Length: 534
Image (cartoon, rainbow, N blue to C red; front, side):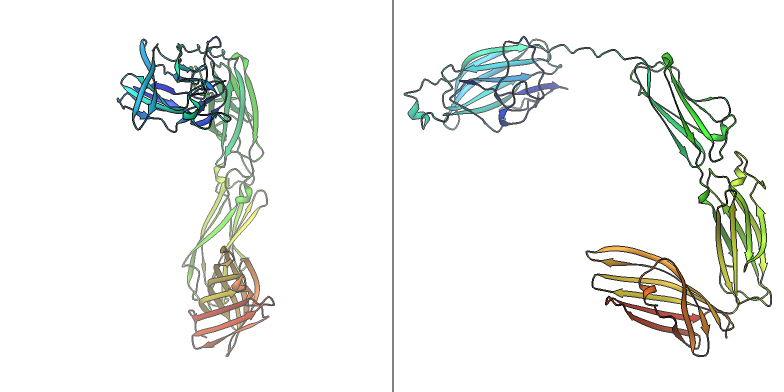
């Protein structure tokens, strides 16, 4: 014979009883998840059993049925219900287990009742026994706690190898309906006190850096630390950045500190400077770490702005200019900024602090600025290119240029498409061409995308530099250079030279190219004269 159990786990919290458990045909040996563990000396131990969960509330919900039914066999000799109680259960409360057999639609025959006096926590057990084996049929156990109740149905089937039906077997088998077995409350096993905390010990010290020259560090610890401090130093004495003079129980074991490098005694924001961090706790606990200030010199940039904006200008017109150079801290800094017109120096200045070498914690070395102007001469070239060129103390260079024209200026658009077996693309751009005599310079900036099966889209953008001549027939141009990533608008201009006929103050042309792969590329240019006439 076997002993099998079903388990109802009830936990009373905040004025309600709740259950834990999951239904199943068989459950692992031992107490189910969600119940308190019985003391090793308890006379009843769980063995091969089934698990059932249900819920009780104090809202006097009656006759809640826990589903599904558990199935036992005539080989089983015991059925047990085990209830886990919450700490909120009052001392002297009663948990009642009423066992009944069922017949027909709603007929019950009471078998026995267990009333068990309980208190906070622990587990309460009600056992039904049948020494000759459980009789086939349907049963239920009604469990009550206060005004709430839950019905726990189960059924017993003939074990494999037994009689074919329960009715035909009753005459030859001595199966029994459940009769009262043990019922008890097992008080909760006392919770072992937590182990005492160990001595104060630094578990970790990490450092980091903000590009605007802020040094940071965080420390964690284990054990019982009554104090904790973070100190930082560069070339001067250590400075306390963050501290906890008294650490209350339950305080998260973490401390963080941050400081501007130049606020430290002997501080330095020059690349390569070393920040030394130390975390010190009570009982002599300590840890140290270093951080080397990074070099962000590659962020150097130059910029030039003008009034009027780049475009067509007339001889005698003044162009107001502002040149700037900047680099992100921390870096050695900007050495100088030069403005030039068509390669000829217009102005040169140093950084804001006018230093000839990098100085620690000198904010002025991170930038340079100049304001000046350029008067367009009467004999100005057709194209005027004004550039701002920045040089860093580390040798890094950056440049930005704007262009003006005094001769003919043609502006317009370019539209390009590509079609292939697997991909399609489209790009659009703006065109600017400047004419000096018969010489033409300029180009276009374009952007777009191409899409390939199965619908993957790739963006494109870039610029194309053009040069050539303008005669009575129109433009004869060729590609000098490309920058960025363009597809459709570049591939369609594969010829060494392409022609754009001119009619009055407008010019337009379309180009068609079929690649060896069979992909087709088309470009259309639309231009009009916006500067001086021919």
